[in-house]
Length: 211
Image: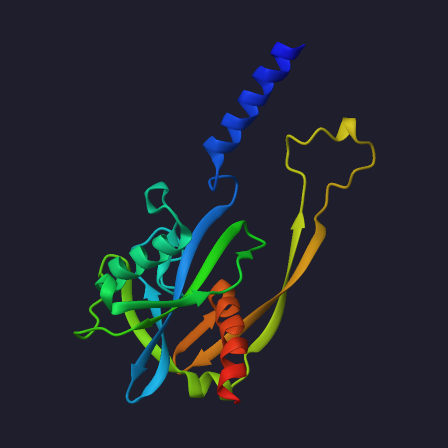
């Protein structure tokens, strides 16, 4: 029995080590980039290239999947920001982290806040970014988001063994309702996880701006 327990212990340890950070959740990191635009502090956003397979054309912060080579979520956020905005590490000053988000659709997101001081006009990677734009913090503070709600549910598929769980419904079952915020600025609409991260940052910024 001792040998069996030892072998199980080793197998369990190897199982955890092999899957650290790469379980059923998509682990990603983003940077909320502050920048001075036209003499005032603003937040920079990206519009994802329509050629991308995941969320093409959507508005987001710089960032992406945390790769094994990154070593940390922060390193991933900085790397992705450098690649997507063609910036050097010295042009990005990390100010801190926001709360980790586990989304209802299975994304584990690590958001950070940074200040950009580009030496040249930003020229984003054309492969990943269709365009960049900024929204002044003054505007974001003055305009509350539109708030809506979404519902997630479950429904058994064709291979579900109904005979084993008598009376189990074949219909959709509501499981969770969650809030979705929308920030509209000109032709752009910031929503989803990006808006959720933005909202948390604005709450923190408000405590400083109100002093």
